[in-house]
Length: 138
Length: 145
Image 1 (cartoon, each protein chain N blue to C red):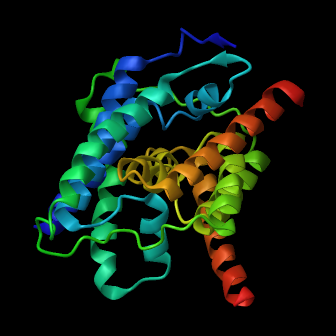
Image 2: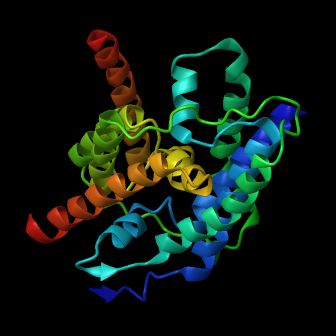
């Protein structure tokens, strides 16, 4: 039953990405293009998501345990460090370059888009490369 | 700056955003998990047996979305995909996004939606950082190159 719920939530999230326009790289780049013809739509995506999220996570803060009975996995790190900032800066460059972030790229790949498929393969390569780099660093 | 009224879609974008917020809230309230695509993929690349099933189920739902949308949603609600980037840019972008999101421990979903909803300052810093370089990158490729 839990797997069915999680499948439905993945489906809901994917439909949200499609309806909002996040799966259209031109729309993402249109939002990031402040100096050109600016498409403010993505501010509405974030606004809608965070508006509902504030209610949902606000409710979770008052509860001790999730509906399924498992504990809440609140993120443990709260500090602002170099990896957070450098990694996010790097992510933003890639995001602007192609107009894809991870979720929408996965949805566009599933829809059969060949550039999204190549993007996802390169992204998984980047993730594996990070793990190697981190292992060597330790 | 001028507004691109032709592509501006406040209603469908707000509606889609609300669905993202519902999915993120419901996954946390039901399963106690943060809806972060980077984290979900990380969990599958380095599997810990008990954590994998929910990630697989969620991703299957995500992959089903474009097909369900094609069957059930009116065509005018769906956006066409405009991809300006050439193949080399797509590959470079993928590597930067993969490496960067793992390094910064999150992307637009985990930091952007869930983090801001939790009022996390850490996620706010991450979101401002990737939006900042996103703005700069598009400025460079569209107006300087």
